[in-house]
Amino acid sequence: MRINCRVCGGDVEAALDLGRQPTANGFLRPDEIESELFFRLAVGRCDRCTTVQLLEEVKQEVRYHDGYRYQASGSAGHRRHFAENARRFMDTELTGPDPFIVEIGCNDGVMLAAIAEAGVRHLGVEPSGNVARVAAAKGVRVLGEFFDETTAKAVRDGDGPADVIFGANTICHISHIGSVFRGVDALLADGGVFVFEEPYLGTIVDRTAFDQIYDEHIFYFTVRSVQAIAAHYGFELVDAEPIWMHGGEIRYTIARPGRRVPSASVARLLAEEHARGLNEPETLERLRVIVEGVREDLTDLLRRLKAQGRRVVGYGAPAKCTTVTNFCGIGPELLPYVCDSTPEKQGHLVPGSHIPVLPPEVFAADYPDYAVLFAWNHAEEIMAKETGFTEAGGRWILYIPTVHVPGG
Ligand code: SAH
Ligand code: TMP
Ligand code: ZN
Image (tube, rainbow, N blue to C red; front, side, top):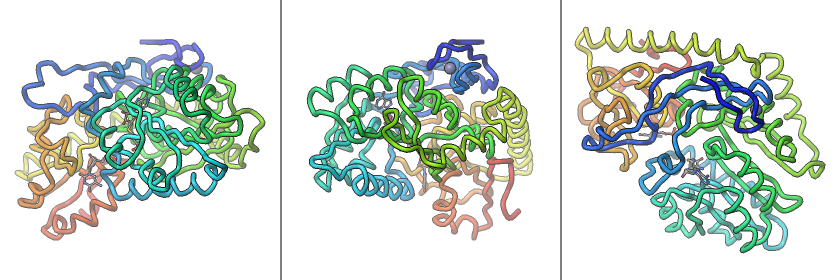
């Protein structure tokens, strides 16, 4: 399987194939199983600009709609992080007269709520109607559209140039990246910045976090590839800052060429990537071998525990859980349920693997012997909350970076 790079037209060949998969946030009711949509989840690297990307994609209207199940405010850590982001923008970039910030993919308003509260001019562009309404209820001004060149020009016509265009866990979701950058070009003030925080291929490789690979993540950025993408569309990468979100992401700052002095961290991270060969073709090949080992270890462990009569369930039903359960072939026979605090997911099935999602109260009412922690990036928050489980003798199963059972 091969495609032309979405950025530069170079050659992208499949290097890591996670098989037939459904859309990762497509939590479904039992009566919807018949119509569930599958595609081939495979990534490859562009031989020209090095951008790692999906080969096949699911149409954006199938991924983002009125029943989109991801709510960004679901974790205290995320709420804190985005409140800090809002504060930082207001202290640094949004200090001129009547500043204006646009967020691409504002979801439930986790970031913009604080900006709205401070009375700063803003706009969230959010195509998923249900989460957009939650944002609007918090006082956020929302445009219910997909961000692209056309919407960006319409916003510019109506509101004038933006001092900041921001996106978190959204820019890597957008297949039409050329249209996004042309839109940023149309909308961004001359001295403005385009800031985005996205999963980092370096983290995926370091932690074997292959569960970051799913239909919504079209791109798996590195500092090197984002620098190439920015240059391709007439911009410059001026900062790259590692952040802890989702297990380790990078916050990229893009500006018009020559408008800002690139920070030392861009050069430092580029040198680091070069030294470890992150942008080389072998990276995905090596990851493939390790990921296949994790699949074997995890399914072996679950089968062994089942044979011993142990009760094992899943904890957290993030999109990541869809990739892992489908790639490993784990269904309700090995995990009778996963518990998740998101009301929109409860009563539904994990896409593809069809494991029921139940509220955390079910978990607390009758602790199992083991719980596979799918929401591993919230491990600290969850383990602190679920001390009753471990005190009752329960054990966590983690599969990042390798399959292990802390404490026994
Ligand atoms: N920023 C939040 C939400 C990320 S989920 C966070 O970091 O937690 C990704 C969001 O991007 C979804 O709400 C989805 O509806 C939205 N989205 C997807 N494609 C988009 C596009 N082309 N323009 C704007 N938003 C988009
Ligand atoms: P995320 O990592 O993509 O934010 O997804 C985390 C998922 O885990 C989300 O569906 C909510 C769920 N979750 C819980 O069920 N309990 C918790 O305590 C936390 C923090 C998250
Ligand atoms: Zn390319």
